[in-house]
Image (cartoon, rainbow, N blue to C red; front, side, top):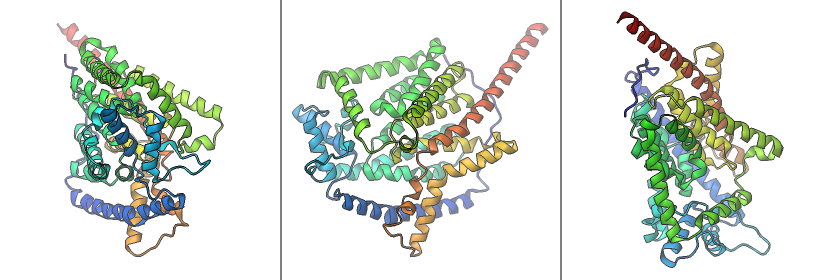
Length: 449
């Protein structure tokens, strides 16, 4: 059964008059960001890797996943084992650990085992070829998912969105390390688009596939589960297709490696405890305050999920709720890595689409300030790249300047959430007004008849 459509005035503007100007600005941004990546960031990264003795390794996050998949499918080895971890670390860092040295657990196989079904075709190739394929494939998935999101919920020209997504600093980082965040992002964003269009069966399948990195998708899945059960007769296809797909994946993984769930949990805990990718706030705030903050954010996510459970899937309020769940998930994550901010792209586009909601002076100033900070990675990378093209040299000593586009990475999810919450509140108010008007109209019609 289809949900009833909503009729609400659009809040965006047409871009026909501004497209030439927009094209010029984005062209300058692309030139600057690509110059920053090639002339500043990558050379500086290689210098840091050389200083740490990692320059002989492939430094690819995909290597441990590819190695684990290949050894499991060809030799039936446990990808969560210490033997496979040692092989992965040797390839990642390019050497064995020195006596007494503890290498980072970056190369650990920390995914649900059914990720091997996705990676099985890549296991047929040499890893050098896999790297070249995924350097282009993964950014393309990010751009394609963002394009579909834009076409579904915004009025921004698709060519502009494609450019913004492809040259986003987190996308370039995904291309550098070949991170499985790219297919996870694609599955999750396209699933959200399917649900907005009420294509629940396909949405459920894609949601299940997004659990190859469950730490990045669980917030949206929680919201959608509560929402689906609130109107089971209309939305049950979402839960059924999600559950069926996940069950098939889990059983297939169990056939390959019995007891993989326990091994996966142990491997994930090991990764979180030993990886160097800790939240910046974990070194600045006491542990008890971090725990309270995490519980508060989880409670906020549950509250939003409950209060949006009866809203139509094409309602702006429901779309905002999904975007808030997406950003809150990144806030609650126990670790931070630069490429994870790719999940802020849908929020940034949606905030731009709904900028007219921020009409009071306070909200206008808040929006202008925080939205500018959200755009800081693109702006700073563009400026640094253009300076490099004009001959400005950045020495390895100026690492603060070199890594400036990633400097605010840990606070961006918080700022995005802070901007989205007033929008959600205002849209819920409009939903209540629409419900009241509809009830009044029905009462008037009943009285007339």
